[in-house]
Length: 329
Image (tube, rainbow, N blue to C red):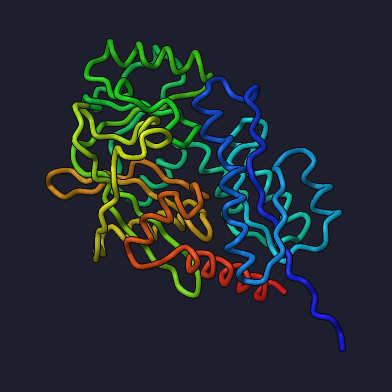
């Protein structure tokens, strides 16, 4: 009787070194992925998989080729050598090696590393956005159609890096000073958009046998801060700064999320941050392919509100990748 072959997968993580990043903030947002990857191992072991945890660096090709053939890979790599746009090389490598994987592909990750391009694609498709402008220098002329207050974000970095109360400017002098500092430190363009006063919603889309959308509201706790935003400290240090409240049955927002997922060439799971103004209008403010994935991350918390535990999240993603594998083979 032939012995049953062991099923194996690999979990890939960002190989973050402090020297790769201009600030401690950006390093913190990447270095945590390794520990988070370890917490996922038991969930896959429950499904009968042997698990390897591998760094997404220049040594990855030989590690993948020398290991026992993997049934699939979970890709958690957010940056390579400190650069988010290079994360697209990981799914490219997996496709070259004919290894199936959970996560967005090369094109989707390349798009995701450029917020301005993301907004242009969504705008063309009719997804609602705040008015926005890309600044490549602090002295670029300000579009007169854009109205204060404005919030400034790094164009190529996610994870709430460089987001704090000073990110919101109420006049041009404040904006110019902030742009000058961001461009000096991070040496990349800055996306500026109108700050939408109102609720902040988080929407996850999860593929499996079917594709479903799960929505929650960020409920900020009592604070003296003027602007209720998910700052870097709120996301990475002060875990009690906001909770999630379940949001049900929102067909309009769900349709925008599904459309955005397809337009941006995302796969398996993704996160969308949306502001809702006092009139009930939606404005998409951020889109994340391969967002932070783990039981104690936003994805675990939001889906738990909707009655989906993390074992079920893992099961659905495995079902989806195996379905794709069977369609290809």
